[in-house]
Length: 197
Image (cartoon, rainbow, N blue to C red; front, side):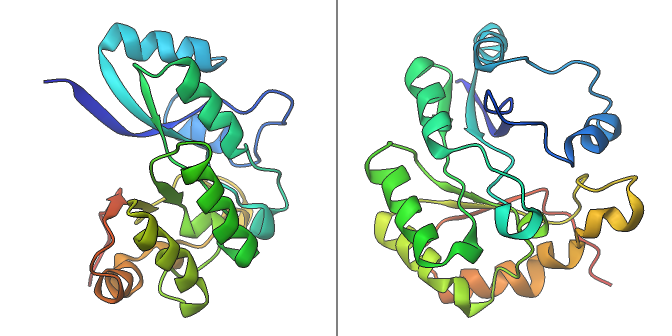
């Protein structure tokens, strides 16, 4: 049986600058070296005989002003290395209808298999009903949603944590409400540990 790594961030899309959160994350996780490109990442996963579910750090443009890696970039990596990777889309939930349309395109045209959301970096409560059209689209497409939950290394060591707030990733009530309101949608919680009392 082959192992599956459900949480693989790809190297930054060529031509885009490093995200502001990346230096702090590298320091926290003691990452002296990272794969320089998708080819090196694929080579590592081939050597380890692991299938990776890949996505970018997320489309956080509305909250951070930074340009995201595109879903086309993720789809290209999957097309180039289909034995090593399955791709999930990322969309900025604050982009409303455009986010729903981009998700549909990423799944139906690009062939990505799920959605990754990062409430802390994207600055939203998952159970805010303004974002329910996104979940309705996930349900109709039959795809899973992976939520970052609990602690995040993004913003560590920076004054005020770069304004990124952990409150958005509390599983209860945020993700619990979404699970209750969308019982047919598969939800995956990354890093689910959270202090409850």
